[in-house]
Amino acid sequence: MVEAVMVSKSFGSHEVLKSIDLRVERGHVTCVIGPSGSGKSTFLRCINHLEVVNAGRLYVDGDLVGYREKGDKLYELKPSEAARQRRDIGMVFQHFNLFPHMTALENVMEAPMQVKGVSRKDAAARGRDLLARVGLSQQVGHYPAQAVRRARQRVAIARALAMDPKLMLFDEPTSALDPELVGEVLDVMRELAATGMTMVVVTHEMGFAREVGDQLVFMDGGVVVEAGDPHQVLADPQHERTKAFLSKVL
Image (cartoon, rainbow, N blue to C red; front, side, top):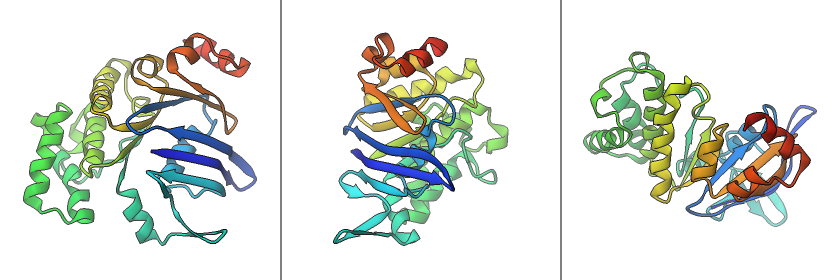
């Protein structure tokens, strides 16, 4: 579903991603771990072209992300073309990014109506189903400011699912939550993984990575240091940098 080939990204003189090679199989859950500043979130944002790569190629479901290839040259897509490509990729951010002036239901309805032309009636029915799926059927009329933080993140998940994405990206979805609230969001993600949704999850939740992940990727300094089966990587890491990191978080 996702293939990164020699992907590099810099901000000015600071090279954040350094020739990343990575594959995410269809229907699998890939969990990405690593210290702050290792490039995890930047890589996630490059997958749906929220950040523009400086070198290499990224493919989602066989399609080159953000560019059109002609001969041996790449031409960046127009914003409208990139947006059409991006609608098949759902993303859940660390800080929710909900529309504050819209209710939970309106947040979930908005993209299908605006991007796909779904009728208000159909978008509302679908939105109610999705909010029920994430355990929020009683909060359809609540605004983000009225909802507890764990509910806001579940609304964000429902909003991403409303576009029927082929791929879901999660950027540290539980890091802004109080510890006792994390479990409810992770339960929704477990259920989503059980349906066969392809997911890339930047996370600090090692238990989730071990239980749900099909692949665990450890990044540091803008490179993939180690990748493999989560149980194997967590129990018997092969690289000293991975061992040092895990010794502090497990």
